[in-house]
Image 1 (cartoon, rainbow, N blue to C red):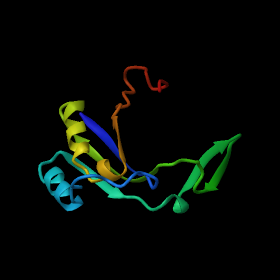
Image 2: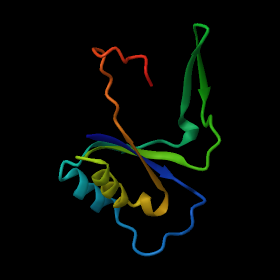
Image 3: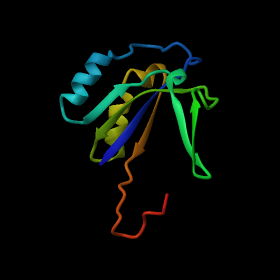
Image 4: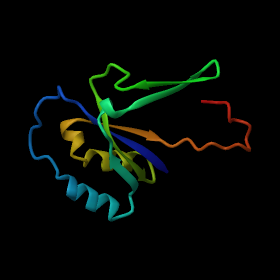
Length: 119
């Protein structure tokens, strides 16, 4: 099963206790074993834009456009047999120690089952 792993920066988080893994080790151990498919860092919220369509008009908003204590700093797409393994992979990421990780299972769109409007 695939999981989107959102890597969250939490500027107000307390300093980590104990050893924080190195990102290079996590990348080697995760991508080198095929447990991650793609991932990257993201530019800061100030570089983001929001896109909405309202009454047929495209509305573009410069970021940041939400008030939040956490910022999505990056992402990875994980390939794991179950949620427990995805949690193990996420817990080994340095940002699990200094920020936060959010895991979301993929929900494939199946246009043949008539459920395309769900969500």
